[in-house]
Image (cartoon, rainbow, N blue to C red; front, side, top):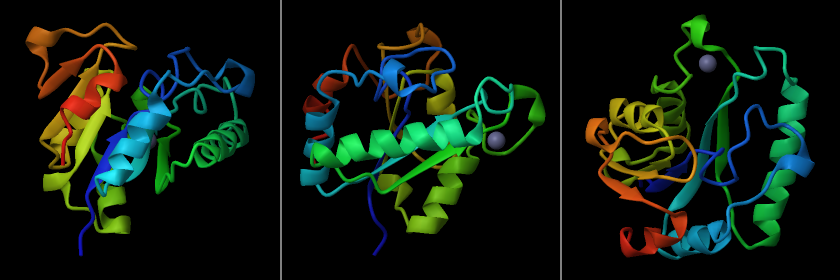
Length: 175
Ligand SMILES: [Zn+2]
């Protein structure tokens, strides 16, 4: 049976946006994120994180710095009773022409195949238009843009919903 999934961007959705974040001490969870994820799990969604990490190709931090932070983050989710199914990251820069860096859909399509995901019942929650575009290209139409990170140009956005905070999501995702 294909599974339904909530795809989450990381920086600006799970944690406060900081450019090229890789230090644990700089990682600050957005208030309410654990309760929101518990809500998703109760509705039967799996949770997958999809994140651009061009700081790796830019030489600002290493793949292993990224992995250390990710392991720490996953432990925190776990301690807060949230199971994260998987985390996908793109280490490449904008000039690489890779297929994984959002707004390209590569990470979503990889996740879809790996976990047999039904994109039609799945959601993408991001803080940037490139999150929405990548999701749309991968066949996800249900998208939410949160205004917590980047500046959002709503009139030019393809997002289905806009929210000030991830804490309002339980009014939108009801089943
Ligand atoms: Zn890439």
